[in-house]
Amino acid sequence: MPEKRFRGTGVALITPFTREEELDTKALASLVEWHLESGTDLIVPAGTTGEAATLTRSEFADLVGTVVQIVDGQVPVIAGTGTNKTQDVIEMSQYAESLGADGLLVVSPYYNKPTQQGLYEHYKVVAESVETPIILYNVPGRTGSNINAETTLRLAEIPNIVGIKEASGDFSQIMHIIKECPDDFTVLSGDDSAAFIIVALGGDGVISVAANEMPAEFSRMIRIALEGDFDTARDLNYKLLPLMEANFIETNPQPVKAVLAAMGKIEEVYRLPLVPMVDENRAHLLEIARTMGLIE
Image (cartoon, rainbow, N blue to C red; front, side, top):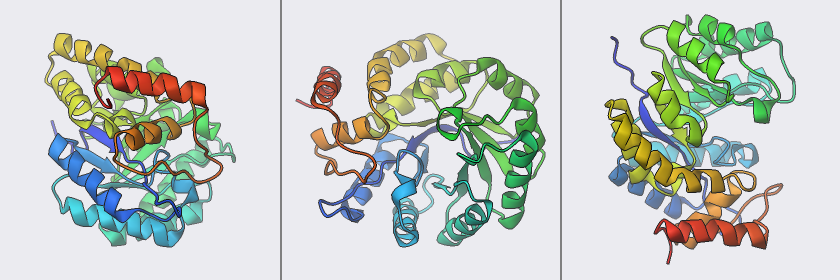
């Protein structure tokens, strides 16, 4: 079986901001170094969890460039370059390629609600514009449309479309992709709570939100599952489940940033339209974080 480069636990990296709402490169460097020490397999900046929609082109360059520099080839860096305007995706993908990204995570166009043929043509022209490997990102809950299994399998025939981050929640669709895709095509979970299940079904790992808070533990769970020790991995999955669920008590990345701030890793700063959590939800979240030993 061909070796898959993008396998294991990827962290959907948050973007730390200073109190002045500027990119906090010092906190960013510290986070990336922590992930490398903790066994995170893939670093994924400028995605949904990284508030990519609020970043300027210059900030995107600083973010991705800093991550690439610190990682220095130790693990793959997969930059989020998706938006709902195809030409912009092409430009951002070429830009990320020039910055040294090892892969591109390209979310399906949101709001436009393209047909399956439209999705195929969108990804095809993006793939033709770069040499860097592309991972599709299917998250209908945010985009308003689904990349169905048949379209994913068509796209898997394009040489530099090498995988998919699947967050549809449709396990029948996901199993169809895993069963029928080429041997070198990677299927990653886009939902933390589905990651163990998708690996057990034959998937290759996850791009995770909770890995921001518990990188060593989440990476260990996925690694053990990939090795086939499902009993141990299942126990770890249930241990992590309360945090996985609490991370979505409000819109991601509001909860995960609140936890990381309480851990002293970042300043708790968001960009509008994201805002701090309401007090009741924050108290519930931090109690879970306390129970799991993340904060005192």
